[in-house]
Image (cartoon, rainbow, N blue to C red; front, side):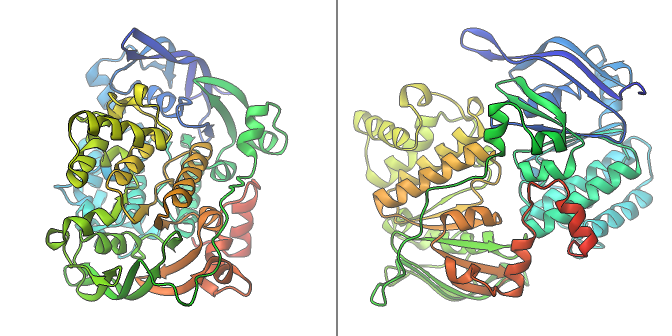
Length: 539
């Protein structure tokens, strides 16, 4: 065997705490050969991202590498000067972050940010870097590849932004890439293109890659070797096929188990029932370009309407229209038969409190300077006029309702929470307004399977206990089939299918719905290759 490109020995990482330093990664050993993909799997807080950053010689703020050795191509990453470190990063080592929205500079065009690294490291001049960027955009099926780079980050969808970040990582043809949940924000059909592109480029250029993911089916398609982590320790490691087909450890077996949520759909809607929220013939977009056209549907009390579609289909735009963040160009939105003003600025306080939103990325949705108690207490104070001891008591009750122990979490900052805990704070903040309708915008897409299951059970329990209605925006059909009562399928801003869940997914399905179902990754390691052989995956 040749010398590994990356060799990590006895890695230990500590995090600052009130009592000093607490070890969160405990003596990890990893090796990675050129052209090999190593999958890191585990629930939230297992240490996956911490190990991925350590492979670059980095740690998160408030953490430090306290022991072990990290060798990249024989170079000790822990002893490099700042200048030497910067010379490697971007040129020979690249990183694809989980949250693309938080990683781009909103003030600069996408093409300028893409070309920056290649030009600064002398890999290509501006003209060549821009031409290669367009080719990569075309390869990963971005719309209008020649001009999409001229947009700003806020002018493309979350899935498109994540794909552009993946292309940026390839701009210098690095030797090592850390993929930290790179397909989290992507719909299933787009995800196939990105996974195939990543795999093709890794093999073509013999790039070594660490692939971090909570999606076990994706890891099954991407990795050669898999390391299962829990609480900063290796539980099990080995060839991916052996681990998937014959896991030894009970924890690995629990991760591999098929999710079986206890969320059951409500009975069919009564013919006499009135919708709590009604959307009629909505048309909306940005500038002169429409994103959604002629969309109509109803949401009934105590029911979950799942909104499904590919990246750029208009799911999030629809949510922004309903909340009044984006005034529609045409159409009417009513709440309890009362027309809502197109802008939230002209809605009454009662109307504002009745429709709340939980955002996809809790990292960017929670103010990092505010403590959890203040984040949840602010809407509670605004909508209920509570103050002092009463405000504190009610805030603690809401935290307890979403599974966050008040004595532990009330005074914490968001950076002290795991991804699942942050999302529970987002749910608590929405509940604080005492709404009738909650819009959930991809709220489990960034969470590992075990944590996501807990979040889904929580919102289902809250629906049943409080009579809430949900507009659940997602690209995960597994979630839809588990939690939805009704389904709205969008494509390119138009309604493809709308109805009760069992009707929408009952064979024979709409052709587009069938395509979405067939694009759901499977635990079978040969699933992606079989798609390519059958011609079902786009190249």
